[in-house]
View 1 (cartoon, one colour):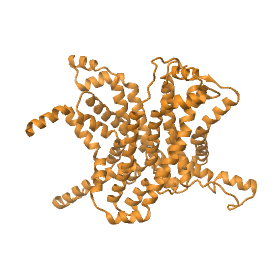
View 2 (tube, one colour):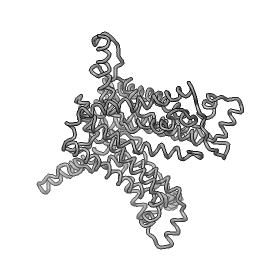
View 3 (tube, one colour):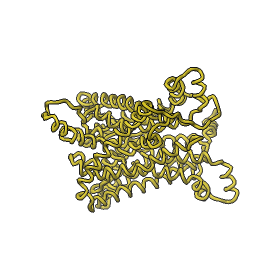
Length: 558
């Protein structure tokens, strides 16, 4: 076979047509893949001496602490997420109607904010230990109290705010299960515990594993909590290597190692979906009739479901409100409103751009059967699984290099300096946000487009509508709810993002997340309470909307 015939055969299999839309999709996708390419490419540059130093000093701690966090957070998140999901889905007890969405409220609270709250409340100088000493007359060294700023404390803080991922997906799975299967199990002699352990749990296992993988990836991505608690993990190591040792290459290589962990989790999660394929044997979905609990059973169910809410939201939020009231007069000033404006502007612009890009990628991919197109869209969709620290490193290195080369060229030929034309602006910060959060609108848009019959597009084309008009006049009105959800979720995620903002923000530019982090590091927890609460309150509305959509998805919802 000649090379020409081979190439024609290869391209025909890929079904790749270089239209304007396909070319734009390829170029846009490759543009958003720049950070990943830079991070992976850093492994081909030698830095043996620095790696030897890291291995002799801190690398073992990075690996051990990261694995310990993964195991601890995964274990406690499973307990806090799965059992309440079963109780809420299958039983009625006091306050269960409110707890079904309230249990999700910790999702609106970033882990670093809950870490500040618990530290301020439970450390040696906090109100809890002060009360103990006043009541008992003990001194600092006369009693033992769990150390909040520790590896175990970091596990607890992350578990308190990440378990909703498991609860959300597991409850959705329990809610969608066929009642007929559970009824058959009971006729075969299974009690409630056996039906949960032997029937419902295996059916929900794929959803549980997906939720667990999200928890583990968010644990690897966390920076604010582990840094504040002094835990040496990969994210803190990347910061120290870059800013402490002034070595961007090794920071990129550490990011590549962390990216390898993320890739392994993504592979295992996708593999679990094929290996753990549990199917319903009945096509009948009867209305979900919850069993009413009374007496001690009702009390037990309420306590089990209330504890995650208490630990993950009520306790930290109450301390934040208390501190916010005490610092009210000194915080609401011109600087705070500038912070608020900066944060809202960044979040809105990023969310809007992400939605536009996702619409373009989703629509172009819908009208293409090319393997290359679909692969690139999937590759771009990996961003949400990648820590903000890693993305920031991958974004800053190429744009800083471009700024440096451009400045040298202009100085040499025109005797002028361009300065930090790109790397010192909001452009790379918004770009990093898009790389990190573009996954959300892409998945939502693709799911919404999948519900629109292709025949509608064909009819529109025969009536002379262009691609833009098809999206604008047909797709967008149908997908209005999905698009609003995607916009809102990206908006809230940008509000909470910390490590990428810390690294990439321009000089003299701050956000609520960064200011909260700075004030907490200065031990000014009362001053940090109001910007922290502003972030938390912004995340509550989408959490309630998501919970309600799950409940209404089941036949028989009242």
